[in-house]
Image (cartoon, rainbow, N blue to C red; front, side, top):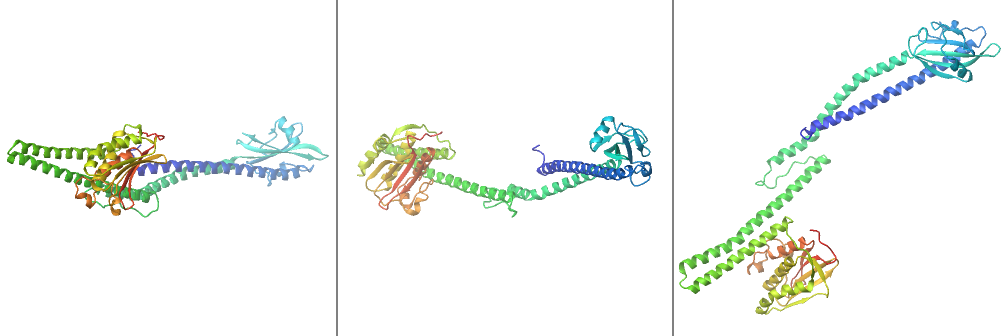
Length: 462
């Protein structure tokens, strides 16, 4: 079914729907006309019975005299006058004295009017319908007057309607199907136009969009949605290209330095000490490249939602103490004290290694780019626990706060001090992998960077 073109499927569905509608409409018209003709025949029999009752009520009146009159049409209608014992007293031609009513019908007719049908009566080899009514004659003797008519006219009318429906129905169905096919083609023309344009769009020509018809319907909304998707894909492609370009640029510098150190060591090292110094500097560049590659891999995994986490309940004080202890020697060397603070018993849910990595990045930034005392703290914020790292320096420029967590993003002051600009991007990736967020703030007297992770009462679904 999926291989059939949409236009044909729409036309087929339209044809099936029209078949059901036409069949239902035809059946309704046919049965309605049949009921109408039956009611009309009953009224006609009632009128004829009233007229003939006036004739037979006269002791000298005779049904035979009405045979050629307006009360009985030869070959299509008939009448009988029946005594209460079932004997036929008078009749019209060609019916004759053969009784139309059974004894039971006569008894019921003496008590009130009855309608009935007969497949055939004498002289009329066609189905007919009769009306039997009680009448009095002479001195009040009760009789039953039977008037009837064949169903020929009714049958002919219904047959004529049936033939017309059998001819007009298929014609109407064919016209409706062709109209549905053409209408489907017109409706799908904008979709085909968008398909042709989509086939020509490539990454080498950014900015191209699908043509959107101004129809204010589903097709227009589809075109607008697809164009919005193309815009998002272009933005994602631009970010990936920028990511690759920045990564190549960051890797090129340590590689160039490593190559230079190795060439100098190979050509100009005159002693073992000089050779060891060259190897040490080369090892530092190798470590820098390894760290950069690891950071890039972490960001790539977090972008694909594949950053592995080992969630456990952690004590905030233990976590902060573990991170601060790694930087104490560096803080003492730079005369930059580190202080911690957190409520007693504060607990959170997270991956210890990843959270230590994120906090380590924040402390490293504070020691590298900030001034004064570095404060590491934790605080409850609703269902989340916020981990803050702040310093007493000049803070982060307001115009840079909006892109501080982007990859390879560094403000001018930080560029002069090295770094790849991945630290805060990794912090945000780790926070979001935990179901939290990261942010930056400050009061103009220092920077305050934080990440929020779920508290111990909130489980993480991974």
